[in-house]
Length: 134
Image (cartoon, rainbow, N blue to C red):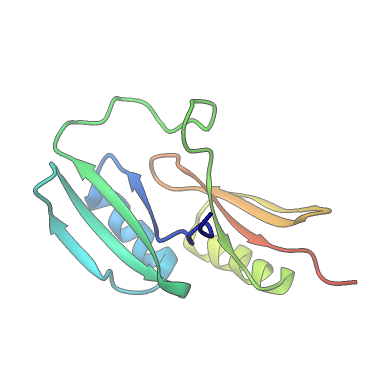
């Protein structure tokens, strides 16, 4: 059996790229790699993240339902971004505060520490740090 491949990209559907693209760009801190209309019926903006991973946001030509994201529907629960340490996680907590992004504060668990927040459409996002080695 072949080894399971690494995750290459995540694409989130957004209601309005005019709102979501600047929000994500401020969060990520870099210019997008791609910003284009596709032949598949959506416009997307894509950022390159570390380890050759891409994060994209899509606005489809078919209007999104008038509802916010819910992790309680079948499908995506949340997207987590890896931090190297709890200290780095604390830096992201400060950065979210600077950006005016509401968050749940750092929550520690035996398997690591997380900092949860939501994008303008309510998609659940998280910065996550594995536990420190004893």
